[in-house]
Length: 546
Image 1 (cartoon, rainbow, N blue to C red):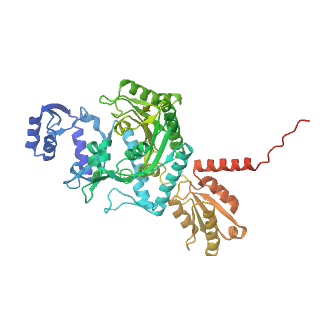
Image 2: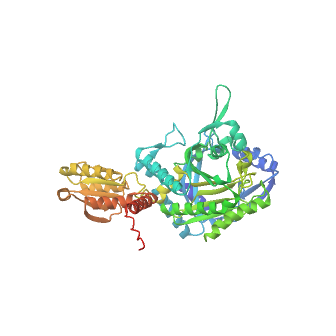
C-alpha cells in the first residue's frame, strides 16, 4: 500500500478540481464501455429507470457516485490507507472476488493522528481476537454467520439472559417462547414474505408446504396475544422472548458477533390501551437507560424518528403516538435528537445509541410503535363498554441481538467484563506444590458460594501464573502460600493490580460475593432477606385499654 499512498500524494499535491456532471444514461454507459469498466457498466444496466447519472471527473479518471466529493484534492492531504481485504462483487460469494482498499482522510494532521490512535485501540479491543484469546467463541466455514460458543462464552451469554430475565420479571413482564419455523401464510399476513423474503431461510415439506425460519419474533407474539379473548382488565400485557432469529446476510457483511445470521433477540412486545401508552413508554425508557448504566454505558443518545411521507394511519393517530413518545422523554427531562420523516411506515420509533469507551456509537435498543401488525392480524380487546378495540402494540428490544451486544460489551471493556458477568470470577493460585490441596478446596468453597472460580495448581512460578490469569481478564486473583494455608487465609489481588490484602477466607468470600452478583439479583436478594427479617420480627404487643 506504500506505493499506492505515494501515487495518491502526488495526485493530491497537483490540487486539481474534482468536477461533477450529470450526463444522460446512455452517454454515461458509453464512457464506461469505452474505458473497459465492466462493473460500472453493469451497475448502470441494473438502473433502467435512471435517465441521468452523476459522474465525477478527476482529470482523466471518471467515477460514478452519488457523492458529494471534495471540490479539490487539496482537501485530502491528511490521509492514510489502513488495510486491504477481499470482497465479492455485490457481496455474493458466487461472484468474482475483488480487492477492497480502506482509507481515511481528515481536515488536519492532528485529527488524522487522533483517528489512527482510535483505530489502533479498536484493533486491540477487537472482540474476535479477544474471543479467541479468552476462549469464548469461534466461527467456522461450515456454519457461516453462526457462533460456536465455548463453555466460558456460553456462561457469559446465559448470565446476560439471566440478568435480563430478572429485570423483566421485576418490571411486570411474562416470558414466552414461539416456534422457530412457521408457515408461509403467517409471513404473508405479516408482510415479511412480500418485503423481507430475500433475507429469510425457507424450506418446503414433502407435501409442498412452504415454511420459513423466523427472521423476527413479532408475528409469533401476535399469535400468542390473539389466542383467547382479551379484556381491558388484562392490559397492559408485556411479553418478553429470548427468541432465536435467522436472517440471511451476504457473506461479505458478516463480522464476528456484530453481524451474524443466527442470533438471539431480546424482544418484548407490549399490548396496551391508548391511555396506558404514555406510562408504558416511560417505563421502557427508564428500564433501558438503567440497564445500560449497569453495563458501563453512561453516554446514551436518544433519537426520535417521526412520520414518513408514505405511511398508514390517520394524522390524529400519528399525533397521539408521537406525542406519547415525546412526553415520555420530556417528562423524564431527557434530551433527544429529532429525525423528522425517518419513522417506519407503521409508526414512530425511538432509538438508543451507546457511545463506547473509545468514542464509537452503537445503535442498540429500540422502542417502536406498530399500527401495522395489530391491523393485519385483527388484534382486539374488549373495552369497558363491551366494544372491541385495537390495542397499541409496542416493540421493545433492549440489547437487540444479544450476540451483537456482547461483542460491543467486550470491545467497550477491552475484554475486562464486569465481575458479575465474567465467565470466571476468581482463580486460586498456589505458590508451591504443598498448597495445591488448600487451593483446590478453596476453589470448591468459592463455587459453593455461587462464585465462578477455579484453581491453578500448576508447577509454575507464581509470577507467571499471575501474568497469565491477568491476561485472561479474570477479575480476582487469590494467592495462597504456606503462610495463608497455615492460617486459613488468602492474599487477594484485583486484575488491575490493586492489592486487596491478606484476609481470612470467610471475609474474602463475602467480598467476592458482593462483587460477583448481578446488580439486580443482588438488590433482589437483599430485599428478600429484609422481608424475611420483617417476618421473623416479633409482633408488637397491643395494649388493652383499662
